[in-house]
Image (tube, one colour):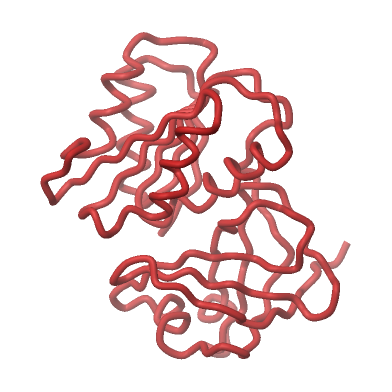
Length: 240
């Protein structure tokens, strides 16, 4: 099957922090993008002639809801040509080409184990998609613990949503770790939270991790080598 490409128009931008924005892309007409919560899209940006210069991958932050709108959450990186294009060049009404959603960083259709979600920064995007999908479709699930890490309080992405979810979604808990600011919650890194909370190895528990490579490498090493969980219980998606 040939790869399918879509064209979408930027219809809205929202600031989330000093360096992070939400971008809403709408497809032409009534066409709907079919995807599984946790997947990503590859965008083709006007950044050069070669594929490696033009293509950038971003996780879909909204749940599959049979609409023709996709949400991306993108942090502006120093020297990041793709993120700079989104933040500084792309305007409301401009169009973007992207490939059909892809990726295997998804929850099983039948959730039989407790789940620990570890995210830093915009790595929370696929987890937001998963959580809204679970709630929208009223999927049966076990306990789910989202542990989110960032540097300062202004960088806590989708904070109000997750705090509301913790109150209304059965079995869901939400923890935040700030590494560079005093905080009413936990001051430090996400590693300390899961290392203390899940130090007793269980077979009915899966870890899903999304963030930068340094964080993922440390988390995998901690969960596998230090805590003693099986590698089959660890799933991750790399950012950067």
